[in-house]
Image (cartoon, rainbow, N blue to C red; front, side, top):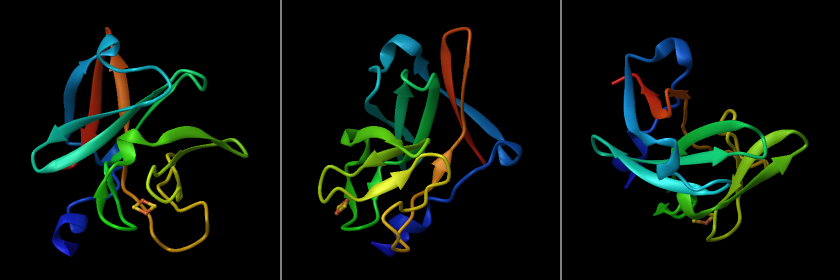
Length: 125
Ligand code: FES
């Protein structure tokens, strides 16, 4: 299981080597998540219309290793976009992947860009 977790590492925009096209804007629900696959990774993508931003993170919740974060509710905690895992409601920042509940579980986050209605997620591998 640890191997699965180890393939998820946050990518910042200046580390991107591949902008992977995951579809067009209308493929994604507004204010909730969808799941895409990149190589062996499952990635949750959120069109956070209320904030006017897109976010992407690992679909794997590190708490019990469930592939569920794309099903989580998104929201805002003191200005920070977050997703709540649907299993036990741990809250993760979609900005930096930290656990807003304070323990040291965290998730990998990825940059997203939209160009000409196409949605791209940035990867470094
Ligand atoms: S599996 Fe996500 S909070 Fe427990």
